[in-house]
Length: 325
Image 1 (spheres, rainbow, N blue to C red):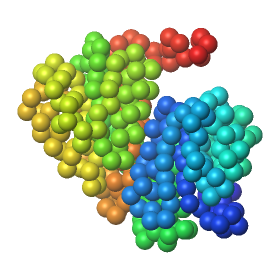
Image 2 (cartoon, rainbow, N blue to C red; image 1 turned 60 degrees about the horizontal axis):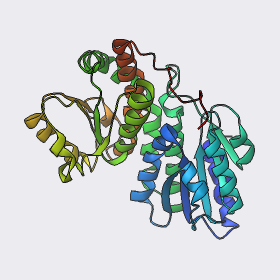
Image 3 (cartoon, one colour; image 1 turned 120 degrees about the vertical axis):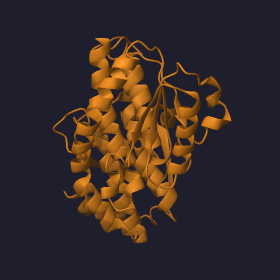
Image 4 (cartoon, rainbow, N blue to C red; image 1 turned 30 degrees about the vertical axis):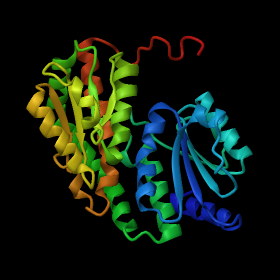
């Protein structure tokens, strides 16, 4: 079923329930970070839809009182993470309509009312518009269009049509930079990652999934707007900092952070969405695509090159899938 057809069906379900009032994005780890651009879009553009994002196990133990028959719960898990499967059951028990995003069928797909299969970001053959973060963002754009007649829906759909081309060109541009980052940071025990706006999800995923999980490197995620309210005190000339500079309204915060980092630090690594071609997408919606461009570049160039330089296979795990937790 085409996404538009599915979302029309979902909206009709809510018409019979008194309307859609809330959207809750539920997932763990990288899947949770992947929902951030969709949440950010609704948070900043929706007039009549409340949006929130919550990690799966917290939703299980502390369900949201707003989750009821007027709520759409969108959940994501590649293979059926137990906490997310349990969260889907909780959402249904609360009366919500549920959509599950998945790669492999699992208890999640058995539980959810509707399911959408996506392509793994880690596969080079995956189209950028088909990965989980793109599907989530696309759902949000469709809801805005169907429920609030969002003015820039067509520009957004055009963005999805060209985002993969932008990504492929950006990978070629970034490869030398990724090799340099890997060579210079292979022995560092900590790498800070910074971002803002819809890019914050990509920064978070790079920290907790790519660096911490896959390379065992300590990595705090710092919002560029919060950098000057405490975190900048740890900056010195030896600290590696990876900065994502997004396009859109929060870009001035990223540029302010860059100026300070370059003045007082020496090991600054930057990905700038403008340099990567994000402005091929309409300026009316391009800021919402920052994550869609950044996340696969970080995973498929910077992570991989760091793994080679460290001689640390990024599929290695110390605890995940190996011990009881």
